Image (cartoon, rainbow, N blue to C red; front, side, top):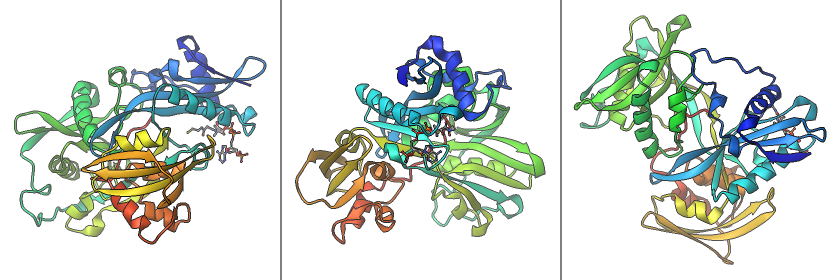
Length: 406
Ligand SMILES: CC(C)(COP(=O)(O)OP(=O)(O)OC[C@H]1O[C@@H](n2cnc3c(N)ncnc32)[C@H](O)[C@@H]1OP(=O)(O)O)[C@@H](O)C(=O)NCCC(=O)NCCS
């Protein structure tokens, strides 16, 4: 079996092979826009080819920017379209593609790779760890009264601005601008390439089916947030995405959708852990969280570069002993944080923590506390204060969140 890069000429065969691996057929997109696969970067994709010349496996990558804690933007690869034909599974095809791909990403100078996992058992062996989490929040409308904010002049205070309802097809450019502003400030968020918006490429942006979009504008008329939604069965209003650069605007959008007539409940499909909405409702139990799941998985390709790239909220020093079994690598790193910036150098000092590269991926964006992984028995803390020190260091200014499907 050979792993080879694809070219533009391979697009159709790549799309067919990938669909066959998932047991699906490539449907024509309902809205006349591009299928999500029209966004593939064919010069970044791989075929696994059998001895008879037929492709039996696919793996792709997009070029994204990932927002790190400290509002740092890092170019990363977003691994996608991973599939092996049912007839060729459990023979090492994916392992061979992953090995090839990781080497390829490093050769491109990338220090980090991300993906969404169809099954949680697949990717840890390749060094990926779950790093952001998302959940659904369901609010029955009759219990959706907002509490009076206990602190004045904060997010709970009504925003000065307006909300206008548009159809998704009418406001692509506007959504692109608002999304871009939002994702630059949100750790864990990914850029959406312009051509995705331009092509209406399948799932991103938002969803292929028609949507109404509540666009919030500030007092000067500048769009600063949106909620895309549809009303379906059982008088349920489902919000695909509600994003804003600012919590006050997010609150205004939540009030707007919760104020809809002929709606009995509102489902926010993607909210980050520690979302403020539950706290803003007078009835704390009105917001029912469910569907808690991992979202973005992170794989560090260069530990020192990745650790020095992100911003840090607390000063401190930590020695990390990191094992990378898939790539057969091991490193001991002294991480020193001063004034929000880190230095990371090799060391032979005694470690504070010993951990696997996938666990470092999990804690990297601040969405998983190192102490949780110590308690789970995956990370070894070499002295009693090590886990608390690591928790304080890795914590981000706000929990990382990603609502981007790719
Ligand atoms: C997931 C998939 C790509 C795996 O491909 P594969 O070629 O069978 O994987 P490999 O043979 O390289 O497996 C490597 C190891 O991972 C394990 N593994 C692979 N897929 C697994 C799965 N879905 N669940 C549990 N373990 C899995 C294998 O058992 C093997 O373990 P071992 O080294 O201990 O023997 C393939 O099953 C597939 O195409 N599934 C449907 C599409 C899909 O889910 N794609 C992923 C999208 S994110």
